[in-house]
Length: 214
Image (cartoon, rainbow, N blue to C red):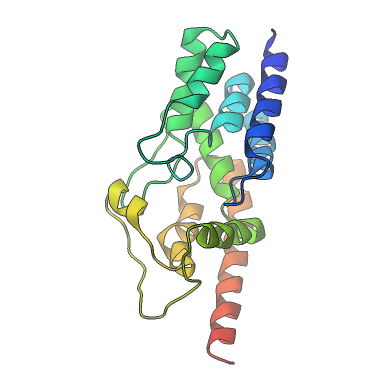
């Protein structure tokens, strides 16, 4: 198969795998990340094939979606089934491994141009109106409260601490979402992030007004 066929076959595989996902990591999230990463890659002189494949596969083994103790490198297995060359599998796997946010105090600076782009695209989808919707979808998926004024946000200094949090969903804005604007890698993403960041600030302002019956 040529590269376009590999991408198209992977897109069909991922769509079937994630179409009924209800935590905010469904096919449409993957599709948005894929298309946005493609757009950024064209402006950043990146390897488009690696960017597209990593974008499509980036959530397949995500810790938030995999049962503890049941991770089995599904992305790598899939690429091997496609007959891809090991150096390409290795490079795409490395991009995927550098996508996730791991806590306010954890440095997740990507090591390649392609990883910078996929990380930006994924994080942009965690911001703005869609990011807000996804955040509450995930909070409900994990049986979390919407808000508790007595539970303060925590700037997690370890990945383990971040993974174990059960804090209300509003806390996630301060523990992750509002921090993303200053962690964008590419100029294209930074411009998009500015607008989405401001929308989240306005949303929180309205949320607290309604909470306080103003």
